[in-house]
Image 1 (cartoon, rainbow, N blue to C red):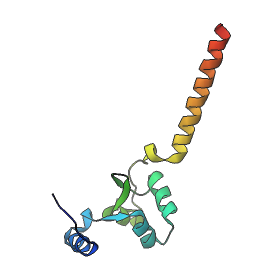
Image 2: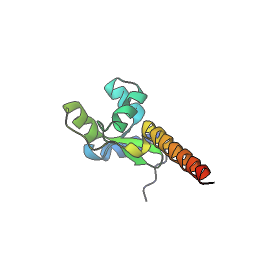
Image 3: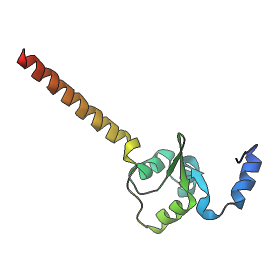
Image 4: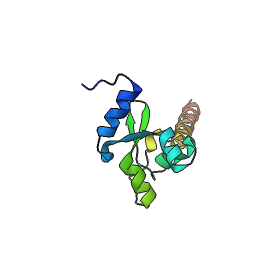
Length: 108
């Protein structure tokens, strides 16, 4: 198992990795693209920028940044984490439950 003990050792380890394996945080990508972190998340959830989850963290591969800047198409959006989708699912569930409750009251 690989153990990282300090920021400096982590940086040295990252320099040894091939560019295709380098991962960037949302904040780092925001600095690279000169946009805000929420704008980067919007690109990820919209499917325009590929990202990976590492636990609860979002990491963007170097290759995905290059492809985005070249204008190459990306993968499908990460819809299970898109807050807009979760809200619409919650609304549908609420309406379905409300309809079921009203139909049960009508049978009494």
